[in-house]
Image (cartoon, rainbow, N blue to C red; front, side, top):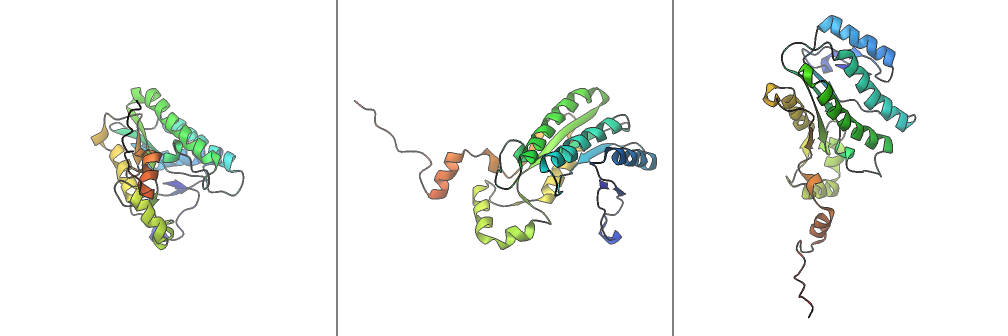
Length: 228
């Protein structure tokens, strides 16, 4: 695992996981760390990208460097270092690759997530002959460590979100991880270039139907008699 900041206490680290520290926005440092990973751990089977820009400077440039350039640099440096057997790359995008959250997320975030999905398709074609499968996972709102308390303490928001989600509940980060794990397994050995949406079905709904349901209007308008 490569991250800018490692867990403060070793007890917080996952057993049997090796950790390396690097700022992915620093291409020179990232490249050096990747070479160290290969030298230490050997060839890889699976490569998973979960990074997101969380800095305080220009959000546009930060998103491009963190989400796009770092992903491109990593893939280009590691594509010749995959082991024999099952090989896959999974990139975590977002439903904001296609849907807009203008009040809470900046333009750069939306553009970066959309571009990641196109990079997946590109690499699915160009790396396919090497036997490397490339897919993405696009989560909706899920409960995770940093957001769980907020949603659980806001009853009205939590109940509304559960109401508009077809599965009538929040998803959990573990459920996203399960999909990533599936895409890294031989159970999806003929799947590449795909984006798997993990949002409980919330993004499938037509806005008018959802609005009618929320305000208690009939989902099917009354029959209009033909004018004579």
